[in-house]
Image (cartoon, rainbow, N blue to C red; front, side, top):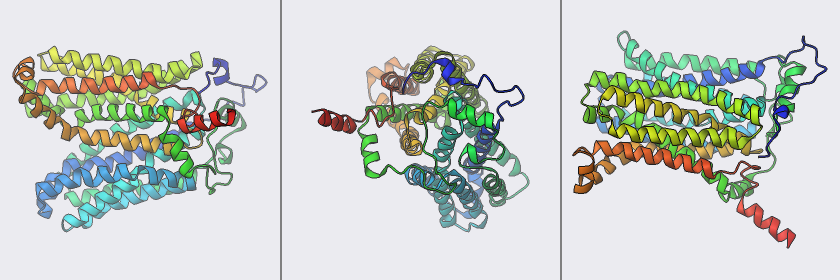
Length: 474
């Protein structure tokens, strides 16, 4: 992507009267999308808290519930990323996101009718497919509705909303179980998503120029401060980019920049999954904390992630405005924060006090979260007319990384236990080595960022496109 002078990013008509300040509809769009993320994660994480009661009520085995909590949702969610992104690019966000929201809400409500394994399985499968379309469509709309200098901030809000929704879902479900049956809770949680679907369809427009709330000043600001243009349907229900198909996918998959973007997401998501899976057990096994203490301490890196995501977006945009450089504002912020994160996680290996260790690791989680908005935003900066397709592929591979973490940790721990030399370095406890595994994951993410070239789109950097250019010159 071309480096832009700072004043280009802050373009403003000097003859514009003070009374004609840009409206802020673009910010309202971001918050509509953030609310959708909160509602999606509320429905997604509530089952984790209610599973024991639901399992007892429906007579399910632990094995059946394990499949429902894991592969039934996350595999369908990952595999549906690309098809649902295509739908979003083909038919537009205004059509698709309300349908997706209604679908995952109704999918969640299906649990209220469950009499056994089949209904709960169908609920998670349908929810996984429907939620897959939320973030590719959201990222595409952020790219269309925001100037390049505000995209990371919007992405940070969207990323933070996921963690907020997950926390609300877990806390609210635990409280509601004291008053309602587990199946009833899922029917209640479906209502906000259905209301959001109607409200968003009535209020949102595919293009800023089609929204009655956008004044001329905001429209000029959005268009003049964009160095790239995402393809937008000419009519509200039109189809989006007219170029794509096999050629687009071949160019993406032969682009080193695309694979580095995929790689950073894979490593970063795999690292974050540690906190959502084995972190509490790690604290109990290595620091001797109680179950109650582990719950409180586990919340610390998750809270740090929310704060880091918000601050990372604003920091990236501030650097872009000051320097006009995508290299400094995207890859600089992400590679630097992930490198520092890796150093902190590694240093926690040598800390014995549990609270101090968690503070050090939580600071690392905060730094890792600073990189998250850069990962989202770079797909907007370098996705050309195919932002949703690039993002969905990145997110799919990131989910595969996150899904592998719960399985890799015990395998890695067993490998360490079988090596007398390694187990000696870990003071006889293989769980200590797990921190080194996650240090390596964050290092991998940092290396990917360092190697990314932000010049042009990922398609411009495709080996296939370079070959065609060389042949035309020859």
